[in-house]
Amino acid sequence: MSSGGFLTDKAYSVYEGRLEKEVSKGPLPKHIAIIMDGNRRYAAASGMDIREGHIAGKDKIKDVLDWCMKLGVRSLTVYAFSTENFKREESEVSFLLELIEQSLTEMADDPRIHENRVRLRVIGDRDLIPESMIKAIERAEDLTRDYDGYFFNMAIAYGGRQEIVSAVKEIAARVRDGDLDVEDIDETMVSGHLYTSDQPDPDLILRTSGELRLSNFLLWQLAYSELYFADVYWPSFRYIDLLRAIRSFQQRARRYGK
Image (cartoon, rainbow, N blue to C red):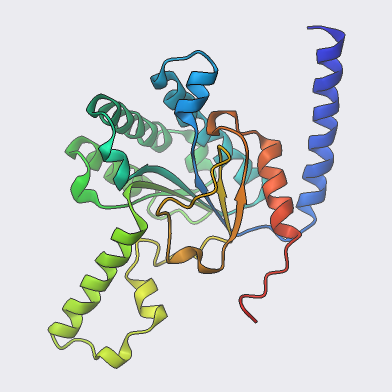
């Protein structure tokens, strides 16, 4: 390594340490949700095959979960595969689903998940998911069902509009069956019929790759979330990028419309 590279790494390490210390003194978001974007562009920029970019993206999830636990952020939700992603080339869709299934299996078998009592959950339309993945999901959820140290949600075959439509149908069925009066429907009831009904709404929504869109992610839940857009591809996302996002969150005055 050149002396210039060594000095750069040392300066980076010092800055990261100072930023971590600063962030740890402020209010931490209870729930961070991430739109993981940029795997394919990362692969293209690095001269890799697209599949290698997706593999790098999969591995990054473990890093970010570790960082959240280190900081004390108790809930993390990642957008792994949207309903719109099914429109991609069939070979890429199949590879992505296999990769996500592998990730779920690895996490279910990871000693750190059990040592830190991380509850694993998948949110999304399971009718669209292959049977082999359903089994991997059920195994991961069953093995961690009673954990309450940290919460990790993976959104698969997920769409925010589709989630709201599903909730509306469930509520409408209750009205039809005489279980519920229309006048009883309120925000709390709708929230109670969403995939995330037993978890707090995200305090911070983070998207990588520099794109300034929400892409149909947690549309109901993000009503009062703070938004942060990082100009870095997901596989290149660093601890310092997470710290910067949290620092930005801490610098904002959250009034909830008041």
